[in-house]
Amino acid sequence: MKALVLHGPLDLRWEERPLPEPQMGEALVRITAVGICGSDLHYYRHGRIGRFVVEKPLILGHECAGEVVEVAGPAAGNIKPGRRVALEPGIPCWSCPECRTGQYNLCRSVRFFATPPIDGVFCEYVAHPVNLLYPLPDQVGEEEGALLEPLSVAVQACRKAAVPPGGSALVSGAGPIGLVTMLVLIASGASRVFVTEPYSFRRRLAAKLGGYPLDPFSTEGDILDVINDLTKGRGVDAAIECAGNAAALAACLRATKPGGRVVVVGLGESIPQVPMQEVIDKELGVFGVFRYANTYEQALELVCSGRVDVKPLVTHRFPFADAIAAMQQAATGGEERMKTLILMPKY
Ligand SMILES: [Zn+2]
Ligand SMILES: [Zn+2]
Image 1 (tube, rainbow, N blue to C red):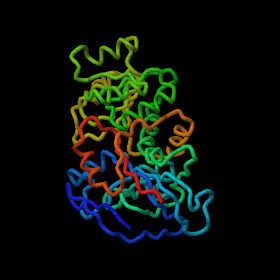
Image 2 (cartoon, helix red, strand yellow):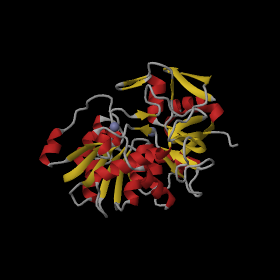
Image 3 (cartoon, rainbow, N blue to C red):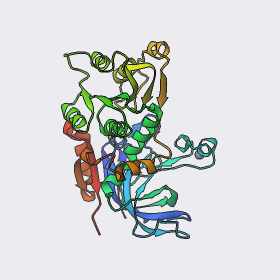
């Protein structure tokens, strides 16, 4: 099968790889759609993300949907050949204390697509455990199936944020993760979701999808003043940091009400200057989010029910044959891009 392999920074090559052989309990899945994630671009540009370093050739891609080709072993429920599925990309060990208490995203032995040394899905086929495949109903397309992955991050973040019905929230950063987080907050009953984002294209999209956009670099009024004005001086119930920078995290801590929660999703490259006095003075709860656990079914329900529409996030589509061009465009494409999808040829 064809696979797109990263050999080092900016060095992607087409290679022929053997067709994966599904083991007992696994299915062979033909990939149909893959989203390009910020992490894929980071590996592509720098060959590493923090402690994860690309030391040998790696297939990127982890946001994906596909079609079941064959199941190894006895047929597993509704996972059978021809079934369209979303693939949850992390395979945990299922036996460590974290796995046994349901926090399998924290498993130290997890094998996650496109995290060195585990290959991802910029390829034609993958063998994957059937219990990590989620059948897509007819009304949910491949593209939405692939976007259940970032949507899962949003579900995980929103669980931690625990915004009450009718409550308010701040999301910093209106990239794909910021926007899906905003959509889940709105779908979960938040009455006002502020979104800070420097790029105007992204702010416009946030506004179109129901958020309240703010420009963090605007000279017209500090965003904290605006948030305070619109929350009767209290601040938001929770803030979710999706921008990955120190100033955004500081704004989240300042904008959150006493006793509120701050959830950190964005990947900061280094330890930022955090105004810890805000955490102490207001007894804030600060939560990290590392991927997700037990979120795919809920993410799928949000899409099936129409409560969350992820389609407006897709700004670019490329056929698999042009995947290198897709990565180059995504890495340099500027602010008019949100989510790029790579689509496999139809059979
Ligand atoms: Zn991702
Ligand atoms: Zn485990």
